[in-house]
Length: 133
Image 1: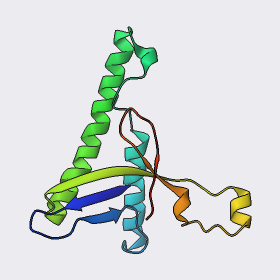
Image 2 (image 1 turned 180 degrees about the vertical axis):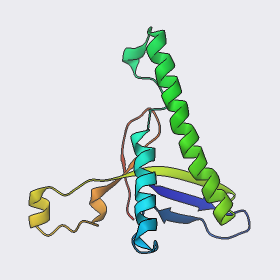
Image 3 (image 1 turned 120 degrees about the horizontal axis):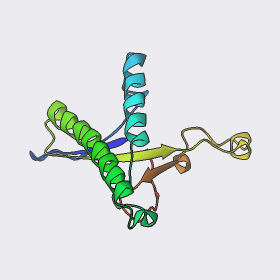
């Protein structure tokens, strides 16, 4: 998960990565942030309902409830980051870190290589955007 913090007092915008082994100590804090980011990802529901739900009121109702649960969780993260940093605006982005293939790994690709990370959009396009930590 990545958070972009924008301040209203002239400070440069800041991007934070969660979890982050470089800044989160003790290790328990890293683990907590890992679990929070996983929880957000596991509750993700697309902004628009899938087309196959058209005409099924019960399924649309379930989709809507699940989307609202995801938004409440995401918004609670935003609220916490705003309160703990004095940021004016906070944007949360889910980030996927895929494992390298065996061939990539044997070829020397490091686990923190930028090509293994992708932003996961929260829109109807479904396109993942490359992102570098």
